[in-house]
Image (cartoon, rainbow, N blue to C red; front, side):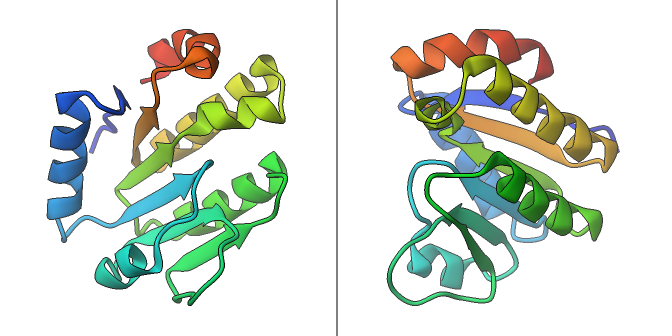
Length: 149
């Protein structure tokens, strides 16, 4: 299987279409990594086959959720993602709002980190979907990543 990567902007009709298509396919397992918001426990419970990595949140935690600290550590996120991908159980890696990490990291460092995640995922036949907001931060990061998606 050849990995297919895509980058989509929130608010676009393509974002809802692509995410809807990915979420409806219950046979394919997905690994979601959110850089901005905690994953809602209800979503984690409803999608038990999928796995969610996000910033710490309050409330109930399910077995298919993992949280990283604040401020976010790229090394910690990388280890969490790698640990999950090594098992070969996932077909999609969904990266949500990674432009938010520009608050903590230089654009060059973040580009290298995201490229690493994409390359690592693709080597394991995992397709990557990047979701970003159309804002000033994403305009600094997204153009340099277009060739990887």
